[in-house]
Image 1 (cartoon, one colour):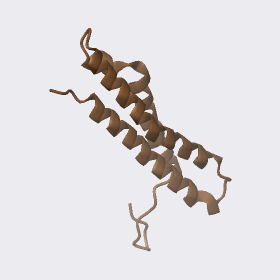
Image 2 (image 1 turned 90 degrees about the horizontal axis):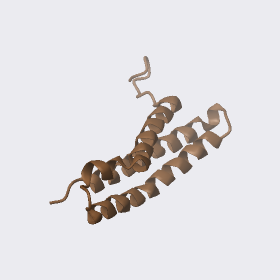
Image 3 (image 1 turned 90 degrees about the vertical axis):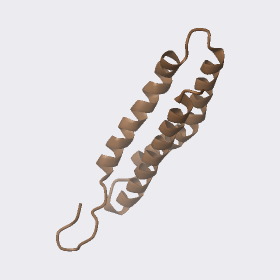
Length: 113
């Protein structure tokens, strides 16, 4: 989007970043806690498949934890226009971290062989 008059790009608002982060976090949480990946991808008695899914669930927890910390840091900043950029950066990096966590799950849930 462009501002009228200055020709520069309009920065993404903190509400939009918070909403995207919340949706990505919810998708990650449901994917990991529901066990849907193991149910959908691993047949009965397939212990190696279950272990691989669990491994990638744990590996994806690192960027998810980073995203949660960044979101909490953004929520904990004092209100005011001087801190808006800090909140925007923290929420933007949180969205990147949630995307990384979901990418790890996507790679881990991909069928092998």
